[in-house]
Length: 495
Ligand code: BES
Ligand code: MN
Ligand code: ZN
Image (cartoon, rainbow, N blue to C red; front, side, top):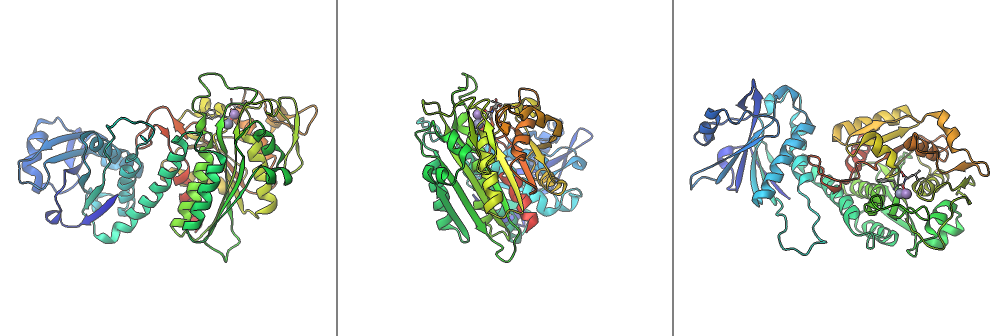
């Protein structure tokens, strides 16, 4: 996207549309910017009272020939006192989508009068607007052959700031690129986005960005290193599994090291406990955690963040085959814990357990954060708007919740309720991989906790918001890229 600025309205370049922001005050629209230049266009509309400045509402008026823009959009930002960055994201998402409908590629945004923004700083305001536009300016249409492609915005002129503020916008762009990358990985065919593909993508990224290093291991290594749970899950798959370590050292002098473990099940059939029709169709999204982890580390590297952060991706298909691992059998994890398989569809916790144990033993993590489409139960509890967060460390939990609050990625903390550990007991092994229907997201988290020792650890269960059935404001339908912005925000604050 091409962003440009001008502080002087009269010096703006021509475009297809100019957007004017309004507040809603006592059910009436009040301009959030100086209107003089547009009075003759908008006065007739405002006089009718039809446009009230209500949050997220728009009205279009058309100009005579010879104006710098043929169209003028009035955008409702709602009650001024209620303004937040998240509301700005959603309001400007409406603009981006309206432009897609009209096929517009070049627009001008007059910024709300900044001194009036008491609740939101200038930078935050810009961030909200840029993110609202950028995150909505995405489609995934490469699997369709039809010729009517969505037209995306190409250039946005911002009126009311100087070019020194473009840095803020560029940061948003870099982050949005990371989100698009994660969305694409989730949306593409599972037959294409295999563990091998993810490994190659990591290696390729490491070649293009400084201080980024990739290591990719296959089935042989997984066997010889005795990642027994990943090996068990991968057994039914023709596709070679991969264990990927993508490491960014942006702060070599520091020992601080964040490890993000991403669930990389590139397709989850359920295994021998095969998923039924209605549950299986979206399971190419079961590597959304891996996508978020890879995108986060890559973007941290692209932004030259002053942090050390590593993505660890256990990746495999959970396939059904005569070689598939078996319900009732017992397999040993990397840390020697033995696990009885109660259900082969509870595969995510198995591969994550090995990855967490491996990380703990070999990568000197200061903290581990896993991101996983782990349970249907969390979707029942929280729906597709938000992720569940589990954490064994109050500081880390607060940092992550604060980060998610700022990015607008909704997260709700759930309890690591000790007594439910009982539910994971096995008669024949150290642990069982399922705990029954009740509290299914909690028991999955408790299972993971058994592999993190005393390391500060957080677990995001993103089964709901990673892949959605409808769009939610600036979050698209299907692959959302959930988690990337919150993890980056978290890292930014560590730096
Ligand atoms: N990948 C699924 C979880 C999931 C469900 C993700 C819906 C996205 C949407 C996971 O591997 C799984 O199958 N979990 C089982 C666990 C059960 C067998 C204990 C589930 O939630 O049904
Ligand atoms: Mn499963
Ligand atoms: Zn799964």
